[in-house]
Length: 193
Image (spheres, rainbow, N blue to C red):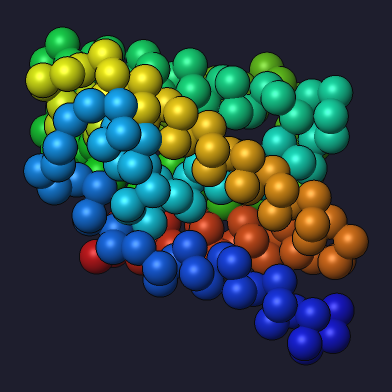
């Protein structure tokens, strides 16, 4: 890949890493459908995870590409429900560590650019969705259902963005690996920071 093409491919990933505040999605916020929709768009950790799922979906093609986003959203809905019910006894720091860890795992899966069997990959996606849902669900109390539905819709939009990015960058050799490595590296920075 030529240097200009590599730079062009890197721009969306760099924008993800540096365009949003990693902790912004975890501060106090408004509740309701619109606020819930905007919530996943406000934290770079959530944006990176959702886009990673979309990139992975694009790499699987039309026949199986729907599995990662649906699996993630199902896990996220379960995590939101657990968070609303008081969580599972994990502190916020543990959940944030798990969110960073999910970025490392998702990014590594993309960087390896290997077809993973659904029996292995779907549980990983469900767990990643679960921890992201726990992070979101622990923050909402009032207007819980509209806020949760908005969060799921915002996440689905980011999955679509990641899938479009994956399709657009598919012709560039190594773009998926580069994107995965960038996401995993961002997760490692969050884990260390």
